[in-house]
Image (cartoon, rainbow, N blue to C red; front, side, top):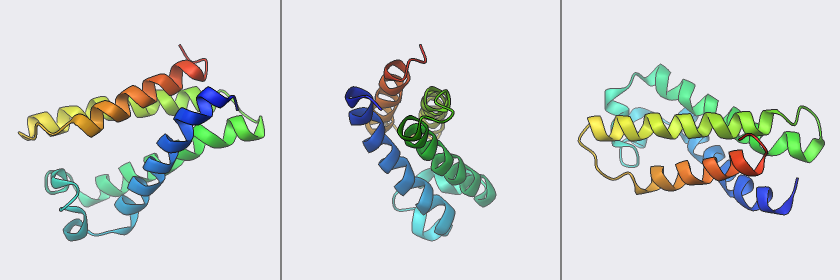
Length: 119
């Protein structure tokens, strides 16, 4: 893993590990204070999203560290770009204009794609 990619991918992966673990393990009532949109999405969809985030976080970091299936890193980063585009849409259609975190995650995931050689 090169240094520039690691500086972007590791914090991004840690964020998605945390967010994914919350979505997989917590109920709707405990997620609501952090994620107001959970009332508009089924709980199985929230759980599936958390699982995707956990797998994507592993895909960002493990292939470059191990040298195995290194093409998964740009694919995972691209998946996070798409995930954040969808997240912005969910926030905006729900009347929530607080998308600064999503914009930052979108930018970081885009940078990770470029640094991983995906674009």
